[in-house]
Length: 173
Image (tube, rainbow, N blue to C red; front, side, top):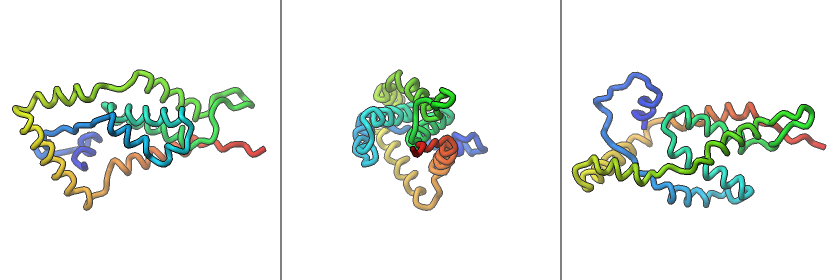
């Protein structure tokens, strides 16, 4: 995981130690599991669908910048109590602005990850070779998880802190 983080951050990295591997992501099952999250059960249907669509879109992102924009918008949307416009000046709240960003981003639908997986699978000589590579890499990566800090968690925590700048509290009447 640290090797992936260093590679994505474009820091100096020994590319000879980077394994040739890929990850298969079954979007449908991932989203089905996400639907069961307790916090999603207590929000409106529209908000739940927006969150699930954003999660699906996060899976298909190709750059860290795309992920960062989506996470920031999602965090702002989830942590703000108000949306719409500010009555005094008729400006959109940050929540409304980021809701629009998420709506536009998720309106294009999901990428066909199964087709991408099949294309990657065709690059291996046999399906058994591909399975072995995946299993070995999975075991190797999980060995290091207990002893190292997750750089992706630290990065996402930074985005969450940034999103708190945009929180607008409901005016008490």
